[in-house]
Image (cartoon, rainbow, N blue to C red; front, top):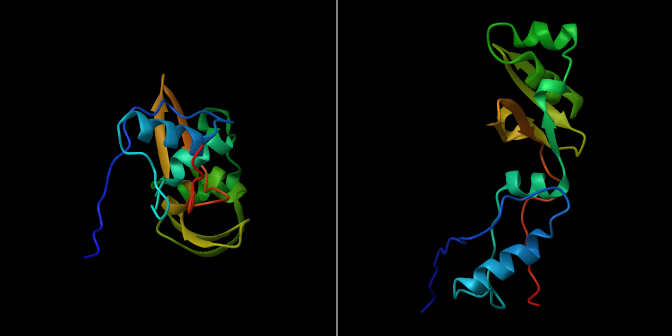
Length: 142
């Protein structure tokens, strides 16, 4: 009989740029008694991968262009829109403050997918950019 089981990994630290995410996940899984085995599928949110890759932008330091301000008007933070535009190769569609863009990676995404998340830490707004990898398909046990 085939069984699919979902097991959350607890005890991970706040991920920072340069962290070895695979190693941290393996160590946390082992500590909680659920070591990762051959054949396991490990799914990781792109926000955590973005942090490990250092692909996080402090929105307070982003100066929006006039174009970004016009797009954002009444819908979004202009700095957020500027961050989206900087990560985009082209704009596919733009309506009512919503953007569909082609990323520098060649993906066509809606704005929220591109950034993934904005979060506040000590009254500073950050956004996590789309990562170079979305799924850690295989983690080697160490």
